[in-house]
Each structure stands twice: as structure tokens, then as C-alpha cells.
Length: 461
Ligand SMILES: Cc1cc2nc3c(=O)[nH]c(=O)nc-3n(C[C@H](O)[C@H](O)[C@H](O)COP(=O)(O)OP(=O)(O)OC[C@H]3O[C@@H](n4cnc5c(N)ncnc54)[C@H](O)[C@@H]3O)c2cc1C
Image (tube, rainbow, N blue to C red; front, side):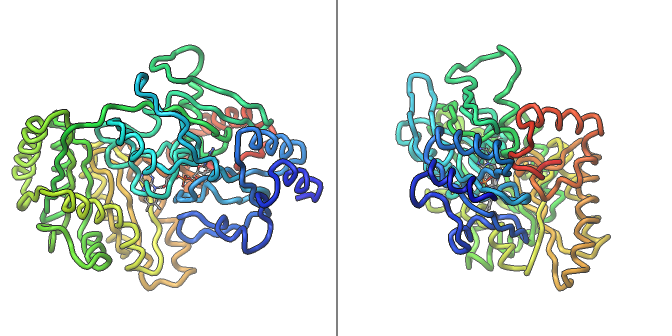
């Protein structure tokens, strides 16, 4: 990067907010994607929208690539500076600007940690449903850029279903506001829908208006063991098809259950020795409805051959149950030297086909595959463990296995990613899902927003 560019950026940010030394940029060399490390030439810690605008205006003028980043918990390498240049961090823009009861809306900066927003709105009797398992470290900005999901997406939907307004800065430095607190808006193209999930390639998000709901008055959490992954997947599909809508239906296989036990030292009651398990969360406006729905879900599970249904009775039992689910990624990483993970999604009724197809891939390549995830959405996190293979053998095999996993999902009417995005990790496989014409059209949209291609280059395509 030219010195003239860096000194102008320093002038915009003020002292201490432009990081250039090896040690100070260390944290920004990786996100949570396994095996990726890329050193930025510099990191800008922006404090407000005006600074973001000035930085992008200068980057455009000097032709410097800019990679937006907020929480750094992404798992597809989206926040890594593959083309070098500047990482633009929004982590210091972390204020909840407004919680508006009358309009059931929150206005936040991108750096607000998702779990912090949950607690802030719940204190006021309100509810923001999207709940990625990384909620204690990921941010609303990153959630919007990836259209993050989470367990409760089954009933409530993903981040995109809650975004009604966005302020963003284009590559040129222009500040644009779209939407607001209005709940219905069909004037013009759905630019908010386009920005959500655009992985920092179209614009930098600097403010977000989110739809809120009243907080459900009651909830129940159920843990259900199964003798096999096929039975658990079939049960999840049966519950979805029954007309009952749990807030969450999470799935995990035997390898995940064993890894969780190794990490946590113990498991919630009833799941020890199971070949698979489902976690259900059922919520509603009163305890009677929740109890009725829980019984119905329990009956469907029994009809699908489940073991005893364990109902978490206290808040600590509930927390232990969800802690097990949230720590699965960490538990698997603790168990193996290296793994890679995909988050393919299929229509919910095709979930059994997906998990059984993954078993075939496991046998074909003689690898261990651990699966967990959002069964109610047909969205499975597929973790392929490296085992004792050396790096070279693993690199070659990895591409073949990824292609097989994506081909399986797409063949079942599904997609390459349910919630983690494409980033760097999956861009070589876009042709499995999209025609050349469709990819060309998407590239033209990118060029319309960012003609010089400075914003998060090298991602998605
Ligand atoms: C343990 C664990 C569990 C997870 N569980 C889930 C889960 O249940 N559901 C789920 O969906 N994801 C999950 N994730 C993935 C990750 O947490 C999400 O993708 C999250 O949305 C990323 O947010 P972030 O703030 O960390 O974004 P970052 O990692 O900083 O960035 C992610 C992408 O967004 C872009 N970006 C970031 N901020 C902005 C901005 N302000 N403007 C424009 N672009 C921006 C970046 O360029 C990058 O492409 C999990 C990750 C981990 C490590």
C-alpha cells in the first residue's frame, strides 16, 4: 500500500486506530475457518460511518482492496484479506442505538455482539430470535453480511427475516440508507435482501434496523436419543411435517455425542451411548400450549423409535443441554488434528437422504464424518476429520470429498451453504449450484455496486 494512502487513512482515524505492526495485526490474520491464515498489510479500526466513508473513498482513489470484518467468527474465510490491502474492522462501532417498543424495532451498529443484543431486548420483554451458536462472539454486522441462522430459524427464520433497514457505505464512499422501521416495503428493488448475505462484497454495513418480537412466555427443551442417524433424521422430518413448529430441532450423531462428553466431562441425562440425538425447543405464549406441543413432539419421537424423552426441568439443565450443542465444534476440534466442515442444506423432508448419503461418502473415502446442526431446516454441519493422513494426501482428498458432499446436497434440491456463506472456502464449487449465466448476472450486480472491485475481492466467485 502506498505510504501516501496510509498516512491519509491515519489522518482519518486519529491516533492508535491504524494497525500496521506484525503483532498488532496478528488477530486479523485468521477467522474461525480451519487452516486459513492471511496477513493484512494494515487494519483500520473505524469508529463511525463518516470514517468508513472516508476510508473507502481513499481506497477507491488509490485502488487498495478493503476487507470488512467485525467479529471474526466466520467459517468460510470471508474476513481474510486474500488480495492483501486493508482490513476494515467495525468492531468498535458496537452501540445499541435504540430499542423502540412502540415499533418493535432495534437500531444497532454492526459491532454489537449478538448475545448482548439478545439480553438487552429481553430485559424489555422483547425478543430477537436469530441465535447463531457463536452468539457470544459474533456480531450483528457479520450476521447481516452472512445472513446467519441458528437453531431458532426453524420457527422464526434467519437474520434476513429480521432486517428492515440498513445504512451502508459503497466502495465509492457514498453513504446510502435503505428501508427503516417500516414493516412492509415493496417500493423499488429489494436492495436490503441483496445486501443481506452479500459477505462484504457489495457494501460495508454501518447501521442496521432489526424487527423484534414479544418474548415468548414459556418454553420447554427436550433431548431425545436414537439408535441411528437415519431414525433421528426421519423423526426431525416427521415433526416438521406434523404441523407442530418447534422453535428449534437440532441434530447430532454418535461421534459428536462422544466428542461432547470428552470435552465437557459429562452429558445431559439420557444421551449416553446413543447413536444420534435430537434437541427440541418448543416455545409459546403460555405454558399449556407449550406442554401440549411437547407431548405431541414426544409422541412423534416414540413412533419413530426414539429412546426415553428427557425434558430439561430447570434452567441449569436447559443451559447444560444447549452448552453441549454450542460446544460441538470445539469438541470435534479437540478430538482431531484437523477437519473441514461444510454446512449444506436440503429441503427438510430430504434430511434422511442427506445423512444416509453422507454415510456412503464416509465409506467411499474411509474418513470419519461427524454431523450436527439444524435438522429442522435440513441444514447439516458436515465435519470431515483428517485422521492420520499427511497434509498432501489430505489436500487432494478434501477437494474430492467436498465435491461429493455438494453434489449430494444439490441433487437433493439443496444448496452449498445454509448459513455460513461461500467466502473463499467454497467458491470453486459455485458451478455445482449455478449456471454460467446466473454467475455472470451475479458478477454484474457486484460490478454495479463496486466497479473497481476493491471491496472484499476474491470472495464468492
Ligand atoms: C463456534 C461457532 C458456531 C457458529 N454457529 C453458527 C450458527 O449457528 N449459525 C450461523 O449462521 N453461523 C455460525 N457460525 C459462523 C459465524 O459465527 C457467522 O457467520 C457470523 O455471522 C459471523 O459474524 P462475525 O461478526 O464474526 O463476522 P466476520 O467473521 O467478521 O465476517 C464474516 C463476513 O462478513 C463480512 N462482514 C463483516 N462485517 C461486515 C460489515 N459490517 N459490513 C459488510 N460486511 C461485513 C466479512 O467481510 C466476511 O465476509 C459459527 C461460528 C463458530 C466459530
